[in-house]
Each structure stands twice: as structure tokens, then as C-alpha cells.
Length: 231
Length: 175
Image 1 (cartoon, rainbow over the protein chains, first blue to last red):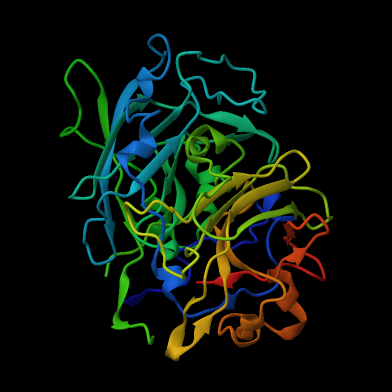
Image 2: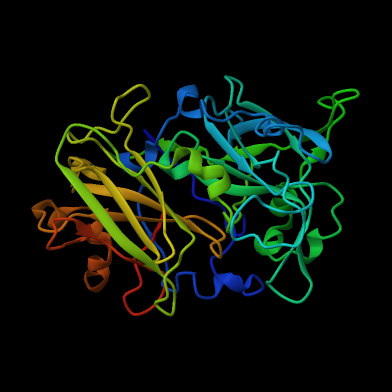
């Protein structure tokens, strides 16, 4: 069993990021304690289709009728840092509706709720690491971080990968969004190239004629070191 | 080597996507226990929108594989008082580095609005002789070790608080 590679400096956000005000009272102030990867970190939960029987990968079919907004198809591959597909791993997504409102009790944004759009989807990657879901393009929405703060359009992604060590939650953005330069959450990662990889690309190949525009978003999970863990 | 995808916050609305797989009772053979506690911010105020995930070995110290009855995975959210509660079975000891054994423990992931990347920690059990020789616990300064060991309450449940900041800030691990 090989340990997983450590994240490269700057490739992940730091815990304290003052432009995102909520980090202030919620980030650890003591340095994290570096530990070796043991079986506890190199194993992790696995999920099956049976876990997903009450959901699907078509977010436009989770209400009684058709949701409002621009229908899109989001797809891509989940691979590791060596390019190997991450097979049969759980992908959980959630998002605002086309008007920029979440179907959530604490979201009080003055925009309409869409009763036909609960806003979540669940799927497993296939044997080539591919995932695909149908949804509505989410709207931008205001938040209270600073004066006139607006979140760019985004979709939340949660992935497990093969081990406890590979777990990640992230957000996918859309190309050309004018709000990206001003968003403290998008800009929390120091490495500009790492940030840009959170932006999906418009994709003719997966665009369905007369049906939906395609967007592609690739996800790369930590890979393993070449040298085994000492056990 | 390809660059790993960067993390983003789970935000305040994660229950929309993550509630499908909330698991607060990990059924399986072994000694049942309940773990409860609170997640508190820098001002000791409850954090009502935190998500806690756990991963653990079974009672014999083996990590579950696909198809096993015992799943080993728990996921609970905090309530308006910042409280969470999880029932499971006590894990057995598992192998550590260099031929050592690790004391029974839960791996813990913590997500919340205001956290841009997952925090990881562990919970150990009190009155467990194996804690003294646990290779990971021994990397933690003695004064902070208690932050990752639960307390037994009068009701028999284990209590463990997560303190994001302060003099007794919880130990988080860089894995």
C-alpha cells in the first residue's frame, strides 16, 4: 500500500483567507500536525448504485414538472495525478436554480424558488472515470461577505475517491463569468492555474442538438507515491 | 504528474446535496457506542452548519471493503446548537507504521461554510491502554493530546467537542 502524494504548496487554499470573512472565526490557528499515511488514511468508504436509488444524474427530473432555465449537460472524467481513471466513485452535486436561489430554508435571497428544481444529483463514475449529469445552469446570487458581493455561477461537487486521503469538496465555475475576478471563494487558492482549472469549458462534443449545451469539467484526485508505506 | 484539483468550501447549503447519504447509525457487530459533541467557533459560539464524516475499522480492526455489511462510514450535520450525534460500534486496533499498532480510533473529516478545505482529525477512546503507544497520538504534543480523546459521560456516551480556535483548539492533522 503506497501513501498518497502531499498537495503541492499553493495548489490548495489556506485555512485563513481574510477576504472570505467567514474564515476568520472558523479556521485553525495552530499548525496542522503532519502524520504518515496508515491504513486509516489509505482506505475509505465505497458506495454502490443502491445508495443512490432515491436520486439520479438528471437534476431536471427531480420535481413534478420541468424546471425553468437553461438546460445543460455537465460531464468529465475523474482521474488521479497519474492519469488513471477513478472508477465507481461517488459524485454528489448541488446548486442554486436558474434564478440564483437554493431550495434551502436559510436562503432568503429575493429570487423565485423553482418547485421543480430541488438542485441535487448523485452518480458513480464509470470504469473509465467518466461522469455525466443533466441540470439547469445555476444563476449568480448575492451574499453578505462584503458590499455588493455576488457569487459567480457555480455547481458544488463532492467526491471520495479510493481513500480517506483523497476526499475533496470543490466548486465548478463557467467560462467567461464576469464575477470570477471578484469572488473571494474562487480566488482563495494562491496558484492561478489551479484556480483556472475550476472553470469548466464549453464543449460541442457533448452539446445535444435542440436540447442542451455541454460543459466539461475534469477532476484530478491525489495520486500515490512511488514508494510504499512502511508497515 | 498531473496537478490535483483545488478545494472549495462546502458552503451553507450542503444538505441539499449531501443529505441523501446522512448516516448517523453505523450498524454492525460489536460494542455499540454513541459519540456526541459540539462544534464551536473562535468565540465558543455553536457552529450550526458543520458536516462531520467518520471512517473506521470494524470491531476486528479490518477496514470495510465494497460489499461488506458494515460500511464504516458516518455522516452527520450539526444542529442549531452546534451539536452532532453518531452511533456506531467500537473499532478494533489497526496496523500502524513500522510494525506498530494503532489504538481504536475514528478518522474524522470536517466541512463547513468558512472552511475552504476539509479539516481532518481523529477521535480516540478514553481509558484505552493502547492510546499510550499509538504512533499517531504520540506525534501530538502531550498538552494537546486530550483534544482528540473523547470523554465518557455519566450516560455512558462519549463526548467530544471540536474547537476551531482557542487555548484548547482541537488538533487537526495534515494528511
